[in-house]
Image (cartoon, rainbow, N blue to C red; front, side, top):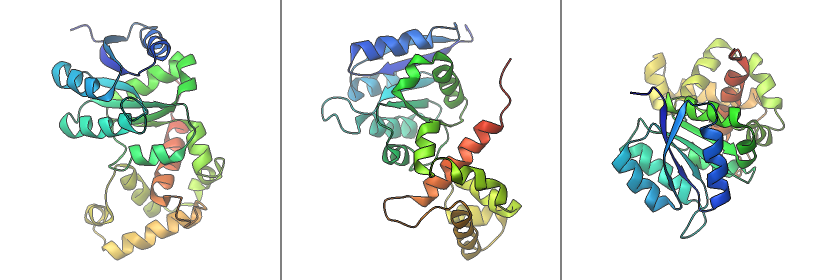
Amino acid sequence: MTGRLRVVIADDHYLVREGVRRALVSDGSIDVIAVVGDAAELELVVDKERPDAVVTDIRMPPGHSTEGIEAAHRIRAQHPGVGIVVLSQYNDATYAMDLLRNGTAGMAYLLKERIGDPRALLEAVHEVASGGSRIDPDVVASLVHAGRSSSRLADLTDRERDVLALMAQGRTNAAIAEDLHLSESSIEKYASSVFAKLGLSDERHVHRRVAAVLAYLQDQQSARPLDG
C-alpha cells in the first residue's frame, strides 16, 4: 500500500485530460491509474479497477449532454465508496442540482477553471474519497443570490440547522422526521422556514432544497481551518 489515492480521469479532450492529470499528481498524494475518453469506458474501468475517486467531465460522447453526471450516479449506485468529482466549463446550477439529486455524500462539482489551481482540485478529490462533498463557490454564489443566502445561515435556529444538515446528507423529510423524532409535517414547516430565511424563492427554476444544501455546504467549507 502506497497510501496514495487511486484516481480515474474521464474527458474526451486530450488537453483537458492532461491538465487534470498533471494537477492530480502534482503533490504525490494521488496515482492516476487510468485516463479515458467517454462515460462507457469510465464505467468499465471503475468496475475493473475500483478506484478511490473519479474525475469526470459532464459532456462526453456520444451525446455530449450529461453523460458524466449519469455515469456518476451509476458508479455511486454500484460502488458507493468511489468519490466523484464532476468538472464543468459552465457555471450552471442546473447541473449541480442534477448531480446532487440523490444526496451530496462523495460528490463534488467544480468549474474547469479549477484545473489551473491544483490545490482546489486535490482538495476536492480527497474530500469525495473520504465521503465528503465540495461545490464550486462560484456555482453556490449563482444559485443562492451571490452568497447572500449563505450569510443568512446565522439566522437559523438550532432545530432548523439540524434539519438542513440532514437535508445535506440526502435525507427525505420522512427520514429526517424519524431521526429527529418529529412529525413529517413539522419537518415540512422547518424546511419552509429555512427556505424563507435563506431568501430562496419558490420559482419553478430554483430547486430550493438543493439551493439550501449548497448554501450549507459552502458555509461548512468556509468554517474549516486551512491546512498547514
